[in-house]
Length: 91
Image (cartoon, rainbow, N blue to C red; front, side, top):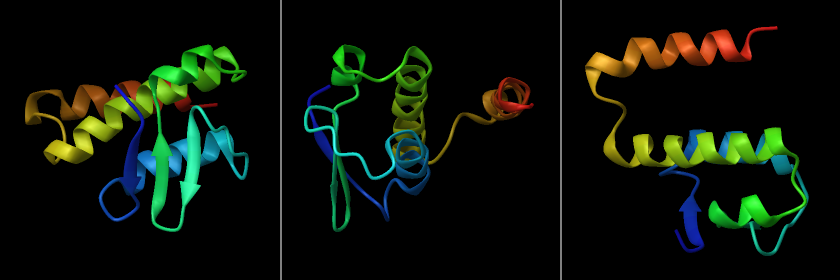
């Protein structure tokens, strides 16, 4: 997937997750914040200096991007997805 602009009104959850990873850092090949969202290249994250867990979060954010674009997951997978995320992120 080439670099694309994610608008904060269209992809708020995706941008929130990615912003948690990169914060105020600008990573020109991966993440470039804009006034209205950010330019993101999910593939370039794999070749960046991000840690393996940060790259994993970029991969998850790619999935969130797709889910936000399509209005969420199919109903039959919504609960298993929610359960998996809760278990993996629980401390």
